[in-house]
Image (cartoon, rainbow, N blue to C red; front, top):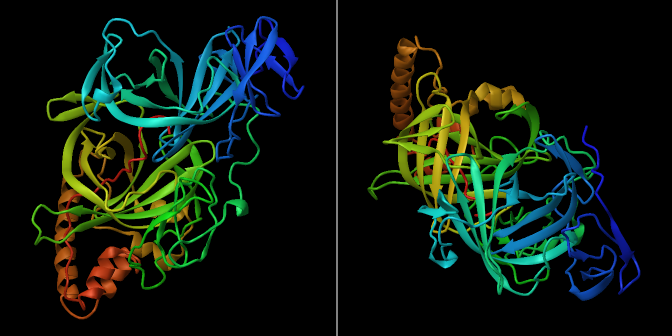
Length: 529
């Protein structure tokens, strides 16, 4: 078990503003924020000098806190400082970690997960101008080739504890998020009036870090954050402090609360496709035990999204799929994807796959391209840790593992400002139903057009039978939708699904098309969020 490191020396004195004790554990730290009055202090010899005041920290879902300790690569560390950073789509935390060898590092949030990184020198190449970087391109930084994931304009919102540099709470600055095929994430920052800062990190889990001293609770009832819907006036109470967008429970408008309580709230109306109340197949708030690449963990459904593939021919029907945003206090966020060809789970990856012709390779697995398509959000429920953009389009490419890895999936999703790679595996509908303890009458509605791809090499005959049954199923469904009865569509996709609503609106005469969009992924904003 990790223990708190013993520093080589500790510097303690009183805050010159309020008299509260202030401690420096690292000899390299020249700045700190008083935990009592939030004064920003600089160490000047044996005295402290007040140079400003930090904004008040806002609570969030993170279980991390100052004083929490862990181990990374056999070296113990303690969290001694914290930065809270905001950008247009949301916010993220960066925790200053002091190792027992007096080395400083950063434990940062990255697309709902965690990365631990260290400052690195910018040697070997000219530093690119951040304003010239664009998502999706390759650039050489510090002697290595990186893929640009995002470039955002950010601002330090608040600071806490001991820091290696003075917190600038006034100016905005650019932050570029870069990733490589070694599973690393590089962060390039350009503070106003300072040289660029460069750090390199890798994905970690709090479980692997053997963390101790974590906050006891992370999901809070936030009555103080309650707001009124700007469309209908109904009360809205977010459950997670990191929530940036929330759906009004009464009129189903999507409300942007990223600017905080008291600000002018932006919203957009959306049609409620749910004749039976708009509920997804797995109710919001449900908790299910799933193995998403690691040990079995409890995952709670906090958000629901329906998306569709935009057909190249305007006369073609749209193909829809559904995504459930899952949350676990230690693991962060994940997605459960319900598409026409089956169920799967997905989580953002830290690095980027290696290109091998038309294929890509991640780790020891090679993937072949399945579909490329343009996706768009059509309906949402619940809470989200990024700000939803109305009708924002994404360009997606799905990949399937080759050889004996047919159940593995990758997805590349690109918006105008960001590229996100996600990885996961297919799931059988029965696994989903059992995990969330759905009643028997609901389980049949979870079955989709195809089962997850079999790992068995001798499954060719079975696959042929499945394909035949899928074709028969589609013909029957289309024929029945051509009449006046959409009950089969409702039983298959649920009363809240767009497929059922499309059939109902057309009086039972409208069909739906099966196609791409088989493995979604959601852009959560660039950088360490």
